[in-house]
Image (tube, rainbow, N blue to C red; front, side, top):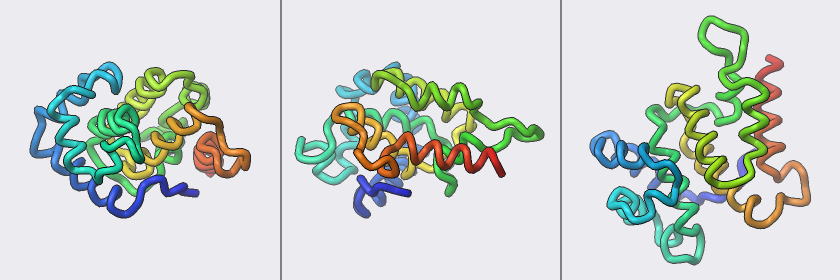
Length: 176
């Protein structure tokens, strides 16, 4: 149930930029040290990100600068791109255990984040729990959708809401 806030060019450029971080560890480290997405708005690392992304990421006509900063800052924490959707990864079993990587309580707290800063911190914690193994495109879509819902309102149709999508993926994985 992907919502496609990212077009094909966005997806290609995000992956290219994310791979570029492997060769530019100083930029990755700078992005990882941010306590909030606002911390990186004036950094050279973020400006490189904007240069790599299509114009709608920086011209105010599509994705806002704070939203782009959130995506860049969070994706810098990912060390391995996987195919499993983000919420499913959180529900996958810990190695040698039958408990999920992220407990139901923490998952619910992530879903109920009240501010972008709180959401950012909880996402970074979730990526740490996953040992950096995250689907970067699914995560970027999720961040942008959460930010949109935070600013406006969740979609009227429940199956178009991020919380419903994540809950479906998380709880269907726990049952397996």
